[in-house]
Image (tube, rainbow over all chains, first blue to last red; front, side):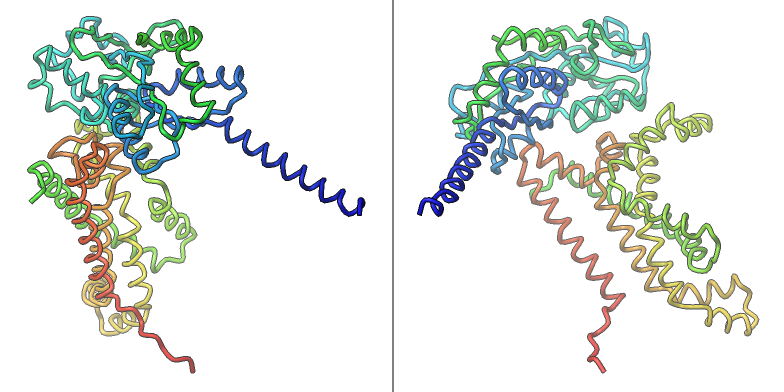
Length: 258
Length: 228
């Protein structure tokens, strides 16, 4: 009898430990939807978070609008780092996200950038002269940085003169690509895309657009319904508020939210 | 009707683009198809492969290389600037050139197959009747290859209308110049304007179905034959 029971016990133990292992692995993984402009800092933050917490993070980068539509359609994201503060609020109201879980993790800075050296002056006077063929802006309907770019042109009173020269990227990453390849001589992108380790613009020339010309780009993070019971999801959101994460966020030219 | 004036302008632009590209593709594709159908050259395989490349490459690859090549530092961009044309990205002409590359296999392959199916015999007969090669081409080969040309025209037209990735990469989404239907649908859906997206997307679906019906009408599928 005993000899027959032993293998049985053995398999029970194996099955249990497998079950435990899988449940641990699941609890340890969090999938995060991240606004494209926050790609670089989020990779850095995540690397540190994975090291200190032992959790695994799967990052997806894209536009906030697309993530909203995907989550609504049942996409398995547990945390959203949006490029605006409207979408997370809306998702809480619609029951897609956990009530009152949203907070501003960064305030984005808009920059007028050219891949050419000393092309953009530090006052943005170039916009008034209009001495360029194409200016790239992210689709203002879809991208907050695009909307901020449009506001800036309007605030400077140059929108009508410049409108025929506008080319639109689908998102801020594609807009950067248009400018970096020189096809558009200049354009509006996120400061985080062009800033270097030393806090200065990496290459080309740039004008950091003063805040008075556009509505602040408050970027909110939110805990999605699917992440409600995930320890890793909750901890990652907490980690975003630590001084360590704050330092990385600021090093990419963002301001901190409160 | 749920279509905005902006939607209509994208439809008009898309039809203009597809029409122009189809005409140019028939002009460019016919000599290539003729050569490919009749040559024994060692270059036949590499040229065939190049012509077919756009069929297997992701449009984003094609679009990205075009953006770089047509840019101010790229070889094509340098040439067009030297010729005083300026840069091609964000222009209608740029879209036409990109679309020709993108739809090339859809024009060449049906015509090539039609020429191949025809064989040598009709041209030999024409030659014995003292038709010059050029004469034989226009009076014998072209009429015999008619179904191939119709398929090529319809497929080029339809494929250009369905083009998305390449246009997205080099178009710049300029109303009336480079904003085509597929990009407009994408923008509607991204902006959660599903109703407007449905009208355009549904229209495209019906259109594509009709196009394929036309293709099958001119290339009847062989009826099933009983095994002997």
